[in-house]
Image (cartoon, rainbow, N blue to C red; front, side, top):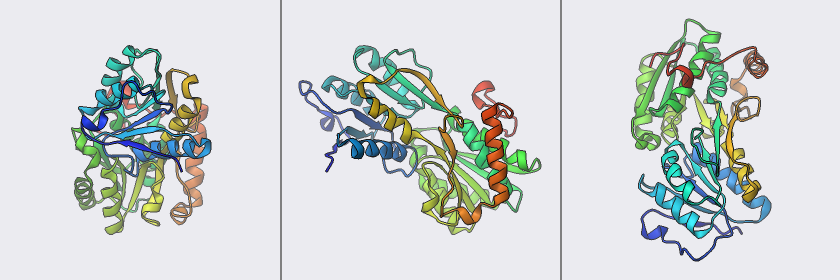
Length: 332
């Protein structure tokens, strides 16, 4: 059985012996924990796949506070973990401080693409492309002509999701209304299912009958309430169709699991630099399985798959929120 050493919150729990070299790599999960059923859990699944296939082990920590970010990086690096995989945009500043101090250690930054750091593999995803596809599905499935989007922390990354989604909705129904809300402006927004539920009910009161959640653990509350209120939801990052079979229209897959698996497999031979994974690289997509198959018509699937091919071929461009800090299909 794979031995998993979990470093829990607090400075004392991070007190690794600086002289004890680690044979394992390390994974730093972001706030919300590795079982958030979304972003972090996708990373956990990728790491577990690597461990099960190779019989090797890795170290991990589930961050409990902002203060632990730099501390966890330094402790793992000092102890010899290599590579060290980090989750989320909020690791950018700690990495920019810590990575130069450990030039022989390789780091992986998921959702970070702007660092000047030669020993960091920076991985971004074309979330707007995958969100466009599920937006098309939402627009086709909606009976009211109003659909919703609930994001986690209000940051450009989540607006990037929302922008792609709104464009997909409008592509199939130019007259559709897209209602968008963010959960908050602090990292707590990733793990507030109660607020997610409240926002879902508010959007339903505005007529939304399909709601896409890109909100980490908060999205669990969105999907639960959507199911309870008998409307459709759309999951994110991991395949969340199974959480409420027959009620989750689809999930926008962001293959964080593959990114983590590939990094662990490469080990110290990991190639650093900036990498972006979109539809062409199968870094994003939509989930179809037995849990949602009855909800996805042949017409819907054909339309979405045709759009996917056009985007890959360059015949259809999905506008990126990052390009202009604005969205042609949605007013924030």
